[in-house]
Image (cartoon, rainbow, N blue to C red; front, top):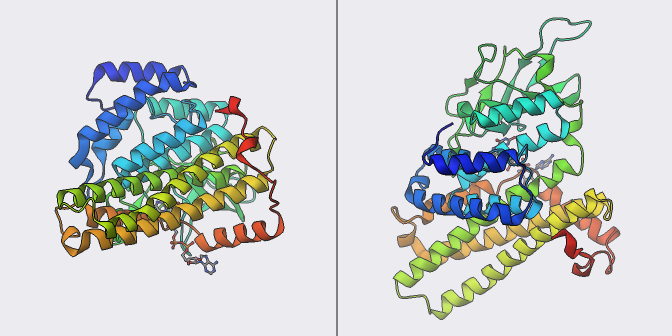
Length: 395
Ligand SMILES: Cc1cc2nc3c(=O)[nH]c(=O)nc-3n(C[C@H](O)[C@H](O)[C@H](O)COP(=O)(O)OP(=O)(O)OC[C@H]3O[C@@H](n4cnc5c(N)ncnc54)[C@H](O)[C@@H]3O)c2cc1C
């Protein structure tokens, strides 16, 4: 574990082990993290893997978030938003790390959860690598009639973090079902090869989301997390999108703030054309943020049995849609507002715009829109859910 501040590290560990659950406990950690991210500033704005940002998170008390560090839902989304505001590549990597810990917490055995907690204490970076092409990863062997050792064959695309992730969680095909495998990527039994030239993206270059071939990697029965099909179990599978939406919204808030500063530096902070442009953008972003908060409340209500899974999943699709639309509108307005001059380096806009445009590309966006429309026309009723249904004791 790397740390630049011993005192803060000790505090953070104590908090982690106590499995924090109150907003008051978390406030000092948020303040420290916020100041740390601000101090890194330019260190997070290069096209390089955000190692220093990850070190900051390792020392922050939030490294086990989603796993042993149990955060209340609003705090989790605040964390994602805060990191995304500092750096979208850092936010993407951290969101994958948290997602892996959440999946191991939900579906892993007691031994596997304890193993992940030890890995967290050692500062290891987790990730979830699901996306793949035609040559997706298969798990071969391990049981009759094929009793050869469990072996991986095939590749994953968009493997964020690449070789920096020493504990990737891989949903792989095993006899037609999806099985989660926690790979010890730095162990001698693991054979990872990056496909040259596989990561030359529009933006988010710093995440190093290469294509990795795992063919020949050996795993053990104890590396299999949960039962076949667990990865796709709802509502967890879809509701995880709330976290990436929070990261994206954080990135959008950063872009808006930077554009505002730039316009003021040019003496255009009171220009009416710009005012008209950003009134709508702010409203859409704010709407997406409120819808996200509502999504988090609905997730809790669903887990408590007060709201149906279908209602929650419709909300998740709505949050995705609202976030994508608000961010795209902001990107368009920002490009128009700063113009070509603003899109020159060293101004930050070309990188912020490219990163947000790239990170907005999430799986099957039109399918999400279609599902939501189907629900609206067939299942929604005007008294289905209103803010009055929110239980204040849940907040
Ligand atoms: C920076 C970055 C980091 C990432 N890191 C990871 C990671 O660590 N792990 C991971 O698992 N993934 C990762 N991903 C992948 C990500 O989760 C998505 O899977 C990926 O971005 C979706 O790609 P796409 O835009 O091509 O989506 P698609 O779902 O392919 O959508 C693209 C278009 O195809 C259309 N389409 C989709 N399916 C169909 C269909 N069946 N029939 C007709 N049209 C269809 C859609 O409507 C849309 O118009 C990352 C992505 C990015 C950008």
